[in-house]
Image (tube, rainbow, N blue to C red):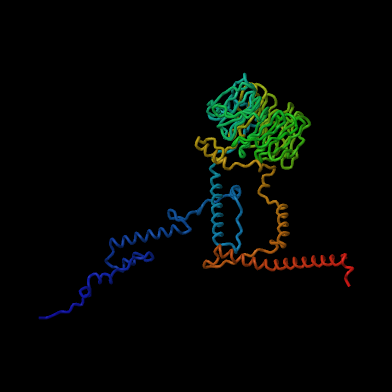
Length: 591
C-alpha cells in the first residue's frame, strides 16, 4: 500500500482562511482598468466592465471639478459667471469693506468676513436682476419740426395700447365742483372732493366706485392716509376721518377751519393748515395731536411737503415761503420768493429743488440745499396750481389750461412739453404714482390726462405695491407701524441724526477728567495678545485688561493722593499762621 503526499495548500488550510489570505485587493481609482484586466488574464468579464465604468465616472467627476469646463469636446469660450459692469455694481453698493486688525478675535473676524461675503453676493444679485426690470421710462417724441405740446390727448390715446388708452377719461360733475384730487400711495385709488360737499372714492383703473357721499357742507381739501382704507376730509367746521366705504370714523373738532392737508407716510402724521394761521400735526396711529403752532402769518392756503425730510413748506401772502417742523415753534427758514402773494409750492422727491408760483406771474425754481434761485420763468397768466411727478415733470395750471414742463431746473425751458385745455378753471392737480397719468380737478369735474414719462416704471414690492392683496396690505401696515419714525427726528438735514455731537462729548469728557483727577483717554488702551488653547476666552481677556488697567492707574492715584495730602498740609499751616497772628485777651498774663 502506497501513500502519496499532497502539497495543495487548499487541502492543508481551512477553506475560509485560504480565501481570506488569497483575496484580490479592491480596485483603486488611480489604476487603469485595462492593466488590471491584463494582469487577471482570463478574468476579463462582467467585473472588469463594471470597474471600467466606475473609473470613467470618476474621471468625469474629476474633469467637472477642474477650472476648464469641457462641452462637446471643446473648451468653454466664456468660463465662469458673466461679468457685471462696474457702474451697475456701484449703484447697489451697500458698504465699504471693514479693516480688521491683528488683535481682533478670530471669531469676530469670521463673522465680519461672512457678513461682507453675504453683502457682496446680494450686491451682485441686485446688479444682475437690474437687467430684467420689466419697464423703462420713455417720453413723447414728435416728428421733424413738430412740437410735442401740439399733440392732443385723443391722438395719444389712439396711438397707445387699449389698456393705456382707458387711462384717459373725463368725469362730468359740474353740479358739485370744483374738485380737489388725491391718489393713494400705490396709485390705484382716486379720491375726489367737491367744493359743494361731494366726496367719492374710485378705483380709477377698473372704474369701480368704492363709495360716494355728500357731507352737506363745503369741502376744502381731501387726503388719503397711510392706506386706501381711510381718508381725511377738511370740511367747513371740523376735520373728519372716513373709511373706504364712506362711514364716518372720527370727528376731530380741535382741527377747525382747515384749508390744506398733507400726510407724512413714514411718521403717520397728518399736517393741517387752517384759516386762523395754525399749523397742526395729528398722529393718526394713536389719534393724538403732536404739535400746534401759530405761524402768525395770516391765512394758510398754500402748503406742500418735502418727501425727503418731511419738512412742511408754507406759502404766504407777503411773498415768503417758510419751512416748519413739529419740534420748533418758529420757522426753520424763511425765503422771500415773490414780490406778490405765493399761489402754489411744489418740492421734488429728492428734496433738492422747490418750485413756486406767485401773483407776480413768475414761476421760480430754488435749490433748497443752498436756498438760492436757479431759474425764473414768466407765465402770462401765472400758475395757480403746481405738481411734480416722480420723474421730475412739472405741471402748471393757468386758468383752464394745463401745461407740463420737462427739466425745469437743469436747462432753460422755452416751451411746454405738453398742453391741454379743460372745461373750467383748475382747482386741484396731482400726478399718479407709478403711472404716466395726471389727474386734474376743475369746475366741471375730473379729467385724467396721459403724460408719457411722468411715473416711475418700477415699484418696490415691499413698499407701495399697486398689486398687493388685502392680506399683504395688512402685513405692510403692521410693519410700517413698527418702523414708524418719531416726530422728534424731523430735521432739515436727515444725515445729522447719524453724526456725533463733538461739543457735548468734549464737555462730558472735561467733567470726567475733573472728577477723576486724570485723563482716562490720554493713554492708549491695552489690548491683550491673543493666546491659544482656550486662554483667550472672554473671561481671561477681561481679567488681563483689568489687571493692566489697575497697574496703569496706580501711579496716577498715588500722584493724586500725594497732591491732596500736600494741599491739606498747606491749608493747615496757613490756618495755624492765621491763628498765631491773632492776640487773645489772656495774652497779658503770659510771662
